[in-house]
Length: 292
Image (cartoon, rainbow, N blue to C red; front, side, top):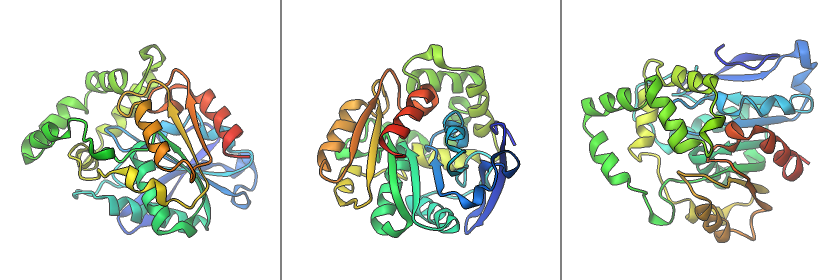
């Protein structure tokens, strides 16, 4: 149970794609957790991603919710089938998880996963109660692929793509560089434990399959075409200093669906994963604007 918060336990769900591990409060410490409303935290999709991304936030909600923080299939301690992942794979596995919990479910999701959740919520709104989207993106928003073409060309060569993954994601120096250059607004906030957690997830057998699918753009789409179709009560939170998906993008996305969204809040001095960098602000924001 790598990087599992104290008083939480690891459990698993058998899905159509394999075993999905998730973390939830222990009845021993938190009482009858099953009787509480479910609250799901979904991590982003990038080299080394896992439930750890939310691990400084979700314990704060254990007193009142049945917290569920999964490692999605292909990530963390869940199964890593060697396959070319698509958006529909994530719709399927997330839908299976929500049906297991009983619907509708309150969901918090970040980055590309948040964008994918939007599309699932449009297709199957009955699965969702409320949504909190943290820096949501389709990675091809408004038709801007942010230089993806060059990466796609390099990563399309079968042997070269795995070599690039090993050099650029599956070693300590690469992980630290990725987190400081692209994820954290202030590198001084990066802890050694965070580097270790990302490295542990990135080095698991077959971890490159899901990560490379993201890097190649296999999951990319234009989120601006979908946000206006949302019917689920939704709050958006955005890191003020996000680099991969800047605040200006968030403001443009919000403008496409202003009448559909309840709130658009900025987390100060934080990057694209504010819950990893400024967990205290994220807890405060969730309690103020979302979990009321």
